[in-house]
Length: 215
Ligand SMILES: C[S@@+](CC[C@H](N)C(=O)[O-])C[C@H]1O[C@@H](n2cnc3c(N)ncnc32)[C@H](O)[C@@H]1O
Image (cartoon, rainbow, N blue to C red; front, top):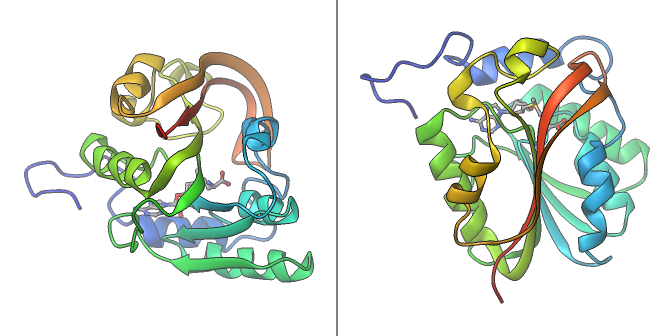
C-alpha cells in the first residue's frame, strides 16, 4: 500500500486493526441512518440497479440503499464492521453482498455498477486515493453515477470528524481533476451540522459530488 519512502500518517499504519477497535464498541460509530448527501442524491439510481458501497463501515449506507430496492455490493477492510453490517441487513430483512476487503485487494469488476457510493473514504493518502478513484471510475458502467462525500481542509479547524491530515482531504478542484473522466452533475463545498453517531458530530466542512461516467 504505502511505499517505504512514504510512511503512512500517524493513525493510518494499521487500518484494519484501528477500525476494528473503533467498531468493537457498543453501538454504531457513524449511526444507523444513511449519510444525508447519499440520501439526497440516491434518486439518481432506480430500483433494481446495482450499486457498490465503498468502505461501507458498519453498514448504514449499504443497508439503506438495499431498502430502496437497489442490488447492493459493499466492502470494508474491517471484519468487525462488516459483521455488524451483516447483522443490520439481516435485522432489516435486506440482502447485501458484503465482503471484507481492502480497496487495493477488492476484485473490482469492470463497467459493472450503475452506481458507486463513496462516503467518507478519506482513509486514503494521495497515492492510494488515486488508485481508489481510478478503480471507482472503471467499475462504473457507461452512464453509471458516483455519489461521493468527504471533508474539505477547513474541517481541520472544526475537528468534528474525519482524518486530521490535510493530504487526505478534498477540495472541489481536487475532485474535478481526479474525476476528469466523469461528467460532473453536482459538485459543491458547503457546511452543515452533522449528527452521524459520535464519529461525525457537529459543524462540518463538507464537499459533495455526483458524477456520471459518459455513456
Ligand atoms: C469514516 S469510515 C466511513 C464508513 C462508511 N463509508 C460510512 O459512511 O459510514 C471509513 C471506513 O473506511 C474503512 N477503511 C479504512 N481503510 C480502508 C482500506 N484501505 N480499504 C477499505 N476500507 C478501508 C474503515 O474500516 C471504515 O469503515
